[in-house]
Image (cartoon, rainbow, N blue to C red; front, side, top):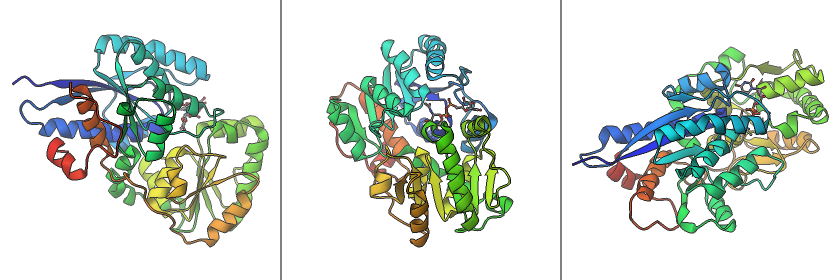
Length: 396
Ligand code: UD1
């Protein structure tokens, strides 16, 4: 019997998205290897937009996560939001026209996500958005604009949590497009735990489990203004006197420190290092006494490891990390008190939220399959399948 093949174009582009596509690629490969005669398979191609291009921001993640080399590299590089988004669109359109995929699969909320969604949807290619429905309700965040617009035109909204489903319904998105599949970042985390446990980063940096703070800060709202960045460095100087800090520095943050002439190299206890790979980052998160961050991914990874996390932002699009997990929002005004209070708490906090079970990528693929058949669309509801259902039916 002829096999039906679903053609997917999967978009990678910037650092947080590599962890989100890796489990999908892996699950599609595993499915194909085991698919029976007549069972549909996936033919996928990977597009790297080149939004992130440095080895430490991109190449190392392909290596760490075992992602195959992209089939297309658009090589857009950095630029203003308008030029980066426009360049991705210009370079992605010919790929869509040549490949004619059944589905574009986009993840997360970076400029690459939105740019590729706009191109595909205008060409009549169906778009599946993984990590749909997250909202910070803060439109000063470029990612919030990307989320809202991507979700508005995507055909399949694959949400990580029930709050995300509720956000989408509130925006008037048809219920049959919305599917609660869980958190795909956690698939990657669980897949990579063994390698993370083999990381030597603690020894290399000479820090002990439970006796350091892991800091990452790169959001424009925090680092693009002289006042906030100097205030952050002043707070870190104080914290470092109490607890050693490991701070892998994002290129944006390094550039802004240099532009503003803020010196923090050589401060006692403040270990500023180059961006690190995935396994080293997981290892640092698991063993930290606390995490201080403005990254979405680290809020989730801290929650999974039950590591206390302070998020230096007035809001989060991942509220489950606060309501269920170990995360708490903080501000420059309250940071010192919040740090003190957190250091007085148990070293492990919170719980792991629902659907952070490592089976999200199979659920994504199962939903794609179901949406591609002529059967009536499913209603928005709880997750599309349990582990055993997936194992039996999709053989991941
Ligand atoms: C982007 C995402 C953000 C994500 C972050 C993770 C958007 C709108 N933002 O922000 O959601 O949390 O990635 O890193 O998509 N640079 C390099 N090398 C690189 C990439 C960037 O040096 O490989 C420098 C460039 O100076 C660039 C700056 O970092 O201008 C910012 O990069 P950009 O991709 O514009 O945004 P991010 O701040 O990384």
